[in-house]
Image: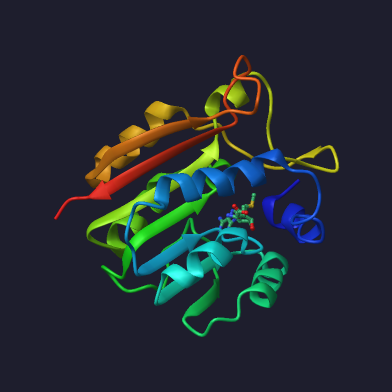
Length: 204
Ligand SMILES: C[S@@+](CC[C@H](N)C(=O)[O-])C[C@H]1O[C@@H](n2cnc3c(N)ncnc32)[C@H](O)[C@@H]1O
């Protein structure tokens, strides 16, 4: 199923159905980013605004991007703060956001839907201020090696496996420095980790 079509339907239940990945993503994001100061943010693939709700009070300029109008409509109902702008756009293409806009760019549970990550890393680096951060939270590749991937109503949603080495080589191409890697498990740590989070920093 195409990604846009899947999220058109998924939007109706995304916030309400049982979804361990969604819930753990919020915990992981808050844990990694609570000690980082940021004022301007770009959220790539903000969805229904689960993380936007947490970020918004911490920021003064905030752009939340998604290509699903249905997911965005729910986010807009939740987050009405005037400094938050919602933008309907495809993050695999250049975005109309100024150079050096953001202290941080975040991308949660989105990159598995993109075949190629180079355009995203290139745009992120352009939009970041010097010393700005790029935070990624993704399904752990290990989880994919054992056969798990995004599904809606048991139908597989278009998704692509990205190895850890791929994230690192993409960051090296654009000069982002990896400063933190975390793996996030369910209660049973004998199973593969559910999520991988990566925090990169742009050089001065
Ligand atoms: C699993 S949801 C994650 C939403 C949110 N980041 C969260 O953590 O709850 C993935 C989101 O990525 C968006 N998305 C996927 N591919 C995209 C693309 N190429 N451009 C913009 N948004 C995209 C989908 O529309 C969907 O809202």
